Image (tube, rainbow, N blue to C red; front, side, top):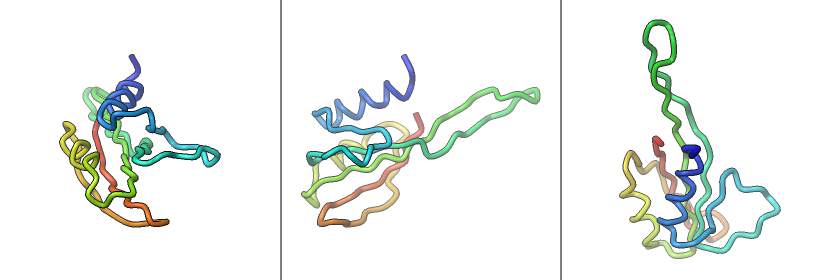
Length: 101
């Protein structure tokens, strides 16, 4: 299975719903809590002048009305996931993480 699709399913399981969006289109009305994620970086490891290992980095944003969202804790516990920042926009809490998957 495609690694991004595996990540999508992991995020759905973590959230407990299908309100997970990869590069969310603007015409979608989200229900909160929700997760939006996108590819952030690709890290290449080289050997013998070729790419030996390639790791994809994704930015994950948990969006919730609740500033003490349990989803934030669940996402923060995912393997290879690190917290980046928190901000409030449109009266919604956004917690941003980076994950190597």
